[in-house]
Image (cartoon, rainbow, N blue to C red; front, side):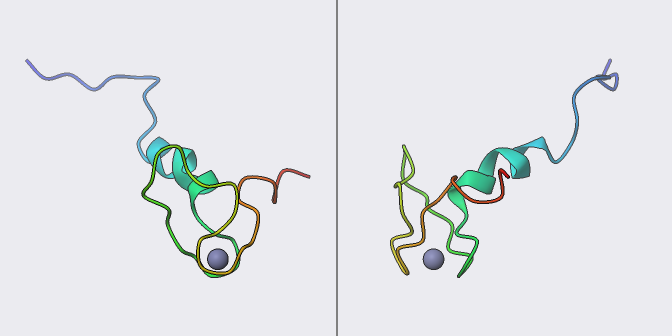
Length: 51
Ligand SMILES: [Zn+2]
């Protein structure tokens, strides 16, 4: 029986990936751990949008 798991929010994965997506160019870093800065434009990742 498959029953819906309450408390498990769908789309949570996207939230976990936010720190891996460049806010400037949208590049998704697929490396682990993700780089401190965007590999494309050099924008710091994970340090923006937390204000
Ligand atoms: Zn970028």
